[in-house]
Image 1 (cartoon, rainbow, N blue to C red):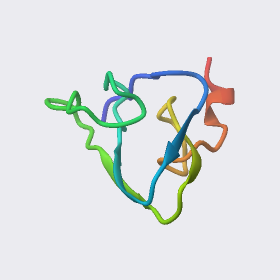
Image 2: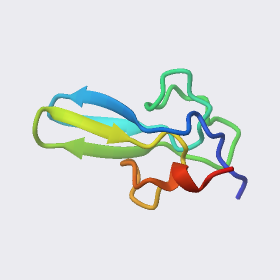
Image 3: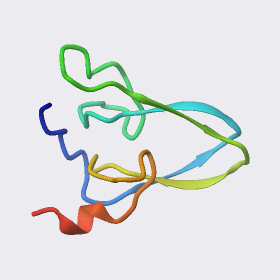
Image 4: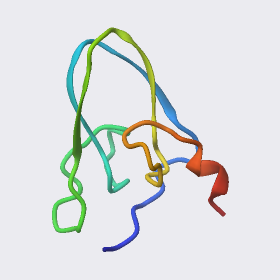
Length: 79
């Protein structure tokens, strides 16, 4: 599998309503941190996730988190 594009070296804070969302795992989306279909033709697939309550969520933009789609600080380890 190829490496994802690092969209940003910091998480993206988004206020989400309860529902289902699609997180971009490839880093190519122009609508970060959400999928816009830019993964077509790559090894990547978007990740579906649900939130149960309205809140601000910090979603990974470096695409190296071990807790996808949420930031785990992995961006601090990137060059």
